[in-house]
Image (tube, rainbow, N blue to C red):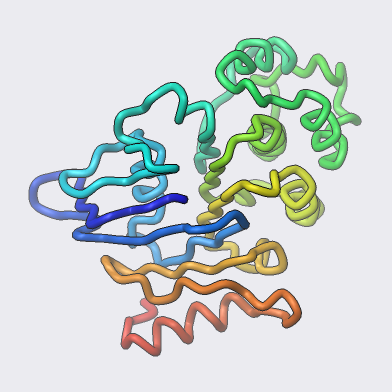
Length: 240
């Protein structure tokens, strides 16, 4: 279980992005983390991973404080940030470097997911030069690596930005196919239509409030845009 308890964090002394903020993700599944710009979604993800340290409060995963960055915990956590660079080396060389840090890494799964993303059509596959790829291609590869790491916690920040229309459709299939049964996957996004058929659970935050934190009824179609606006209206939050 991922537990965020009374967390306060700010990038300067004058303003806190999050203040006395609490939230928990109690069971495996795919969680959508929604909120307006500036609400602190990306900041929260970096705090969860222990890449930022709260001024107050604590975040624990499986009972361990993520701020401590213990190796036994890090091997069970993976983040796909919104923007990143990959080194100018071949894919399989990159995997060789990464695998020792993730003992459950499944190379066969990675290859299957890459093929679901139609990456097999790239020249020199699988010896792809990562540094020569487009942003969308890098995102596809990195998401496949993230899922193949088989961690218990996987967080993704705006994963469909930079993907073309077929890529967004493939993304949903890749995540559904690649995730573990006991895995918590948190997807922070503004592109709600890209993920609304994928989510088991929706969490909507605004400043220091959790407006919605509910499991979805998979038997009924969900319009996340309407759900988001309704949550803002219910709490009297401006949509601007």
